[in-house]
Amino acid sequence: MFGGMEEPWPSTMTAMGHFSLDALPKTLPTPIPGVSLRVLTPADSVDYRALLQANRAHLTRHGDFTDQIRASEGEIEQALARPGKKERAYGIWLHDTLVGQASIIAVAPPHYSLGYWLAQTATGQGLASAACATLIEQSSTVLGATDMFAGVTHGNHASVALLRRLGFTPVAECVTYTRFHLALTPPPRQEPHPPVLQEDLCESSTRRRA
Image (tube, rainbow, N blue to C red; front, side, top):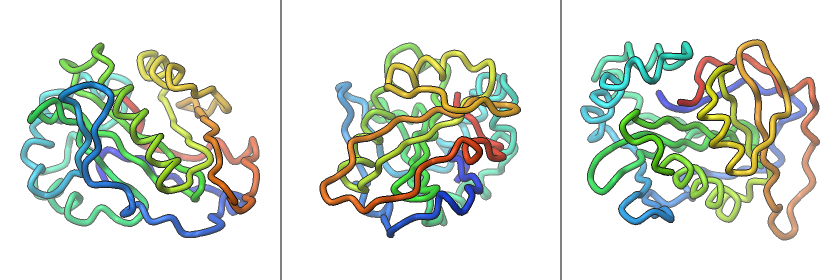
């Protein structure tokens, strides 16, 4: 999916069980009135591409999202039609207007990764924070997530501030980005899973947050 992040994690991050992302609701309210999350579908491809193009400079200012910006409407429609089993991509909607995206990526359940971006005109209103907080809470309660990760390209201070507000802390400095981690309350009778090792935290990634 164009807005997510799917990284090759080593064998120490192998999942201990199966957690289907389809268990997450297709529509989610957020704490902000009028702001909701809705799973992206092919019907959203025109609005999605238009939003990417309108925010070309904003999204690529740190060298990210170049592939997404170059994608044609047909490529976006195809990606939304076949999202794969490892990512659940939601549009962030302000009333009836698409203003961004937030995604959950099942890198190695119960470890998940968070991806997000927001239109420049929608920043500074707490929309991304509300969307991400909602997805984190749902990942914990519905999927049984115990750990959430996110990668932020060096220089993207706004994204760092957002993650810190949500309780994330930096755990690894990689070549082009910083990896953040948030420990979630484990569900009852959670099966034990391998610890995250320091050397596992820096892996190649081509998509960052805006």
